[in-house]
Length: 221
Image (cartoon, rainbow, N blue to C red; front, side, top):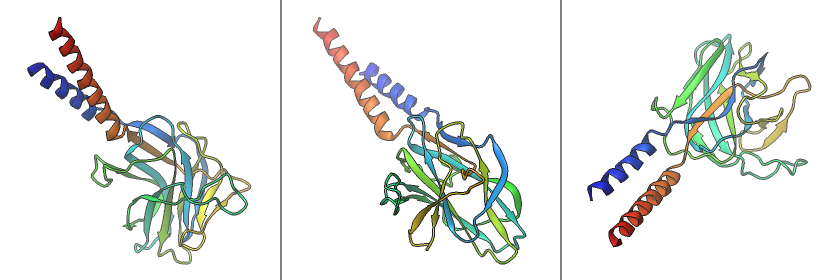
């Protein structure tokens, strides 16, 4: 019985100590260009690498110029499970909201990186990602003379993103793909994730079953 308990404890400890992996990263090659989003919600579609899909950390880079202190931003992560936009049957709009930061204050910056993580306590531990997601940002209280938006980076070093971006034209989910003739519209960001709990549950169950079977065969000899 003691051996069974030790085996279970070892497997559970291994699950608890698993390291997060970077499943998307686009933070190395700054294009020396920022995109002023105005007051529209804009999103970058990310194709994730690796096998981790339970979100553990997320960050992106923003800028703010001439802000007077009442500006806020809101970040969301969507599954790309919406209907295809008109004229582009191979794409799927952002649909299901997987995580919403809520409104938070932003200030003047030439390039600050905003971070959320389970470890910091500002990201829930139960967000499971599909292979394709869109992260979006929307700035509010942007007045004449204010400027706020995202920093453009390319190419990603982990994962993949095409050069276009999503724009929520009416604030109600009328997402449209947009491009820029000059710049690749990939936002500076990174995503980390760990294997889903179901993976470790199966691993633990499989390990224990194998252990019990081994013990049974040993006892029958």
